[in-house]
Image (tube, rainbow, N blue to C red):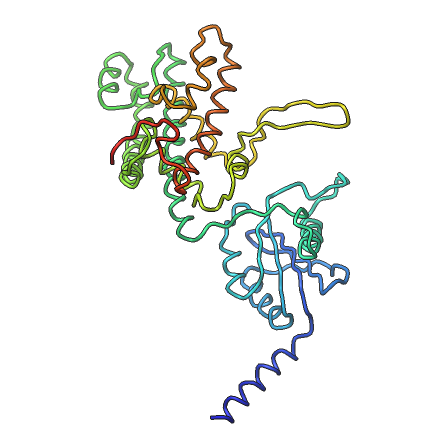
Length: 365
């Protein structure tokens, strides 16, 4: 027994001694067909860029993990999602996903895979050294959060596709002097419309209708799934589908520790341009989650109708209820309501406050 323990201790010490470096940093420029890597060993200068096929990249990373106490990597968020991040973490790499930015800071006009990987590696070097502002990190959702979010985003994609194809048919009708609404292709409207159109035009429009009908069925199915998932107590005006879209885009409300973080994530905070004695307020930053921002603005308009006695709507009623208020003033009020609604939802869903604190009228499941 003692001999086995001694041999296992010797093996661990041998592995530890075999590691040549304390820290390795990898800047990754990821593409579908290859991954360009710039490596920094310890505090030395960046090495020349290397290019790997996807199937050969992870075995190489594994060899780096065996050589160093710590291996750090970063790549930009984009169409490749978080699969690579999870694979790297499974190998023991300290991986981060960063917000996409222009990596040609000096505006030299020279920008390619090698230069991008080099810039990412240098920023990662500064970040690991203790500069948190060297990179803007993206929160990586859990696999479960990502799967839930995909469903609501797929519904949004189908909805846009239905609108796009319906608009093509509506445009064709308009060229022939017939102005129709968005739902020209639904069964009842289509039967009435066919009696007014020539045969050749009906044949062309039926091409669009055959595509739209199955798309609408799939869209309705996803909408029902979201509505059923959102069948919980909620404020009046916040439908089950809207609640699920907001919840799935956020992932978990516990990720925020204060109201400023919530407001920043919505991108509904006003920008500021200030230098010396000059100070100018800008439009909203639109920094953060665009889908969440759209859902919150739509919700704000509904709250004006369905929650007129709530404290937030009453606060802005001097503008919203004023018939002489300009459209710009009403828009600013709605943006402010949307931003504060996100904060109120965060406080409600994390148990920091009850609906009565906001003056909400609640709906039972």
